[in-house]
Length: 137
Image 1 (cartoon, rainbow, N blue to C red):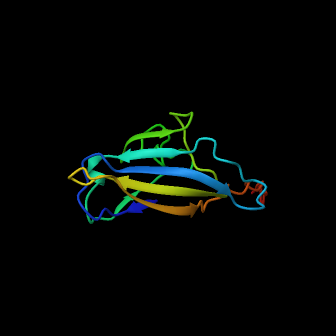
Image 2 (cartoon, rainbow, N blue to C red; image 1 turned 60 degrees about the vertical axis):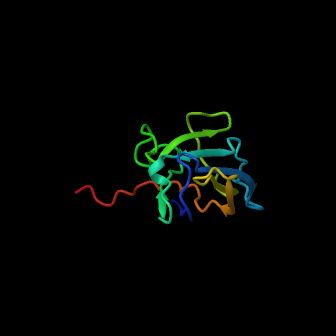
Image 3 (spheres, rainbow, N blue to C red; image 1 turned 90 degrees about the horizontal axis):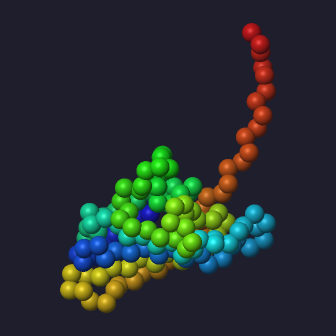
């Protein structure tokens, strides 16, 4: 879930989010660099409301598709791009990312930016255990 709030009215379709891979968790043998980074997206105009908390939900398997259906685009995203892949995009587990949010105001002043460094807080799920037959009843 990605949440943000704009402090003022934004120029329509100017909100942009860039997610850039920085590093892996130290001493984590399963960590891999994100070869698709940077990931960038722009939201639809209704997701650019001022002084309103906006929440966008992204899946870990494919950032820009619905979390419940990998064939349907994420409904709030207007456009997106990741390096070398226009089809499937995801963040690497055990990684640190720089998330940069920018927009222009109604008067088209230079873009306002805010940045935050975040660690991905998801890991690969554990392998399922083999079921044990308890009764043939």
